Amino acid sequence: MGGSFIHRSADNNNFNTHYSLTEQLLQKEHFSSSLPVLEPACGKSCITKILNGLFLKVDQFDINHPVSLHRKDFYTENKKYPYIITNPPYGKETDKFVMKAKEICTVKFAFLLRTNYLSGQARYKAGAYKWLKNIYVFSRMPDLRALIRRDGKYPSAGIVYAWLVWEIGWNEAPRFYTIDNQKYILKAGE
Image 1 (tube, one colour):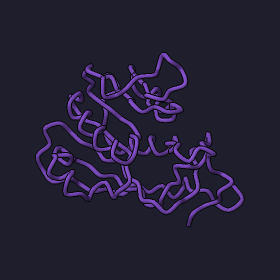
Image 2 (image 1 turned 30 degrees about the vertical axis):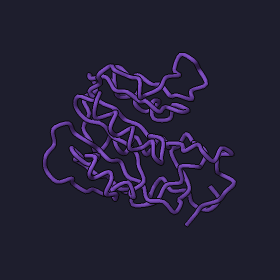
Image 3 (image 1 turned 120 degrees about the vertical axis):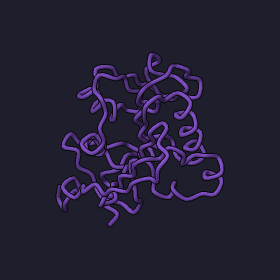
């Protein structure tokens, strides 16, 4: 466990979303390709590159984006989107992202999160889990600090991640699934 530090980004605050993580979400969860999708924390556009292969209309921005055309604060967005798919900022910002997505999303949204997001009395009381429909936990723990590879592979790490999918109006208990990502874990020497 843990992987090699030589494969990691020099920016400790940069959590890359490996291409295969998004591809595996899209294999499990149905999204209509004819509806627009928003990626509001696009960073280096890793998720957006995959979304562009499926959706006809993809909007992306990030408050810290290096290109001013894509620099925008998600909290100021008022446009409604059927779908939102992102790897949001972690920490206190995660809750704000979830609540903002509930305001502007009309169908469903998917966030790549640490599974410890699923515990928290304050989140429960604030309604953060309302409409949570599907939880897709990865069978192996991806290292989101690792550099992006074209083949979608990455080292393993010690944090459990999952795609959490909220569907607007869902009133039943969340459903749990496992995504087998073993084939994307780097082997020694790769």
